[in-house]
Amino acid sequence: MAMILAKRMKRTVSVILLLALVLGLLAGCSSTSSSTPDAAPAAGGSEPAAGGETERERITVRVFRSKAGHEVSMDQMEIFKVMGEMFNIDFEFDNPPQENLVERLNLVMMETELPDVIMEMPMTDVLKYGETGIILPLNDYINNSMPNLRAELDKRPGVEKSLTYGDGNIYYLPMLDETPSGNTPFIVRTDWLEKLDMERPVTVEDWENYWEGVKTTDLNENGQNDEIPFTAYEIERLRNFCVAWGVLDDFFTDPTDGGKVHYGPIEDRYRDALIWMNDMWNKGYIDQEIITADFSSHSAKLAQNIVGSFAGPLGGLLAAQNATMPATVPGFHVAATEPPLGEAGVQIHSSIDLVPRAVVGATITSSCKNVDRVIEWLDYMYSPEGQLLVNMGIEGTHYTMENGEPVFTDYVMNNPDGLSPKQAVGTFTIAQGTGMPSVLCFCETSQLDDAAVLEAKANCIIPFLETSNQYVIPGTISFPSEADAERRAAMADIETYVDEMVMKFITGRESFDNWDTYVSKVKEMGIDNVIGIYQDAIDAWNS
Ligand SMILES: [Ca+2]
Image (cartoon, rainbow, N blue to C red; front, side, top):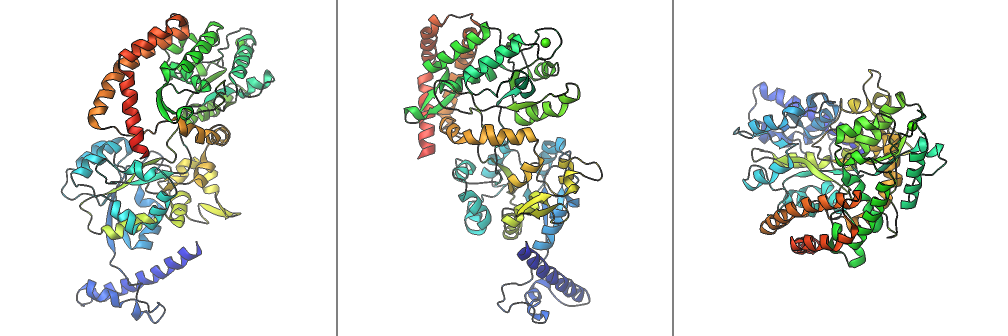
């Protein structure tokens, strides 16, 4: 930071000099641009004579980005004041409320003079505006003028590939993420585990034992055996236990078969998983309403203090349950679990965020007149100093360095005006919002995440990502358009049939004697052809 500070002070000096110069001009001198380069050397010898540091014209950069609900408007955010000073930029923000983003952006995109930078273009619009030349291809800038972003991309194998569109161009500068932010692990009541004198379940036998305990013990102490061992907002969450048998409930690459693509629901291993689920169903451990549940009916059920385990997102269900339930149910606590372990001997998360995520941070439009200057500023946001500024704010005000790590001050963690940590962050930076061309640092998220979420990431998710990545097909994989149409058409029918049959196998309405007939039918519907389409796409991705 010391280096940055020195640099800033130097620039501040230069700004003052430029101001003096401009005032001089107002008093009757001639053109700005021709006399600017002479300004620095005239500074009384304090500048190095190398001539590298010539003062530059102050430019205006117009930035479009929506304002998240927890944020102040961007023109009030300190990080932009600091960067404006640093790069001699006046920012002009078009900062509509998030709910008006699409409407406002559509209007803006019809204007002849576009903003220079659009920080939050919907992913689906990027290629459209890129192909028509309205936003610029950025490959050459990234390779030649963005050393900091280049370094971040080089640290993350696969990300550049996922940023590159079919036409070979990169159209947006990404928001990178150091940690997985989304996942839907199985979640258990740790206070109930304690009452049962059990550890968090790992193997499928552990799960069965826990469910038996929930089913047969009046854990909520209301005099009735009304406890539901497992429920979820959709039956797919239950189906996901198939990972313990070494298959995914979808297409996956199988490392036990040289990485070849398989379709889980027709595998023998999947049948074995369904036999177990059917057993659990018959024993009454699975909520029968799982078939018709949705997120709101599920949430209502969770609020009744009757559910022993469920599955769902870390923020939306794990953190939310721990934040709200203890008020009415003293001692209530839920925690995530490791992926279930079965006879396959592997622990797999089937739904993982791409690690790292690389979503839209910023695009630059064809109206931008100072692309090189804008690129220089944006690249700074990916530098170690820039990341610290964007994530943590101003040292001394928003964070302090403790043992070499940035730690939020009470301004964020215990805000004097009663703002939540996220709201407090939203008063000086965009890092807790969307559309940030930088890296969302672990230093920031680790201090703002709920304790149970942090624990889940550290113990239940991150240790299993390497194995999981061998199975999970990247979400950004793309198919040639003809093959994609074929795939979609076949899968529309196959998924409908598979969903119906899998539900029947779990609930016992279909005998496992008919498994082979079911598999034959899925094959008749063209599953092998679709597996081939996935295999080709994976081969192309890996080549
Ligand atoms: Ca009870």
